[in-house]
Length: 372
Image (cartoon, rainbow, N blue to C red; front, side):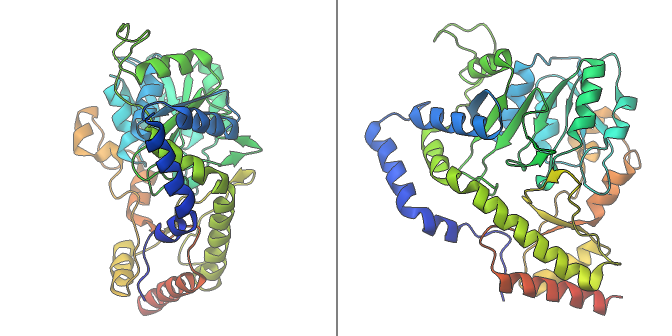
């Protein structure tokens, strides 16, 4: 059996007619840049996030970068964040001239350990960028208390967590702003690059709108150095077709996750660690990620059986060569480094067939039976 990590074809076939119609409407209108589809999506995602404003941008990486700049982050500032994340988190911080300060993670959730944040705060600290990894929010209630105490900005990296909640609060409600990616593999994915910032801070929202169009307001008058980072009208049209299905898709992901966990824990509860949904959290399972012994050997074995897996992430940011100047060494963030050696993500998408799940679990159990 061949099992892909992600199969977008079935979803496209189900929505094909609507998507083709939406694309044709854009082509017929000849309104390709910041048109009605972008406005509609901005309003929908902002409302979904219980936020006043949505600002569509070219991709999730730019969303973080622009949100930081719009929040006033600049050269010399320090930003506390997680090292166990995609490169865009650290890259955006450096591109605004600030310095990332990496804090270790909670070994259960893979998110930044809120109990370690205060020790990392200095007089240069201006913001915290928590990453809601794999679809579960970081401990935002504790992080917000710290931010209030030290007068810090919070920019939530929610690239993987649209729809995630904590004690009834959505992504975007507990921070200064939150950023989304609509990369095709995301829970709400475009057919190309796309991203968005959501916020209840109107000053930040207005600055972000200006930054995304070369810092121009009015047109051809530039008071800040901005970028060409607009959410494409075509991608917005596609996302508007997909958005009404999002909650249904999230429910499917959660059901698949529950089934994985039940099946795996029947045989391997003392060998591997299945994902833990923290009490009060609503996990949207962008990834279904295990902590396992002999991770690389397991991945190789599953590949031989036709099963795709992914490792998010094999090298944490504090050890990346490009950040060598920050002075981190192996051993500085032990939980992060341990997770990088143990984490493996299994196929996860709303249309994942049950027989694929059964086969994946069967082969994982077989591997540990052969390697006990």
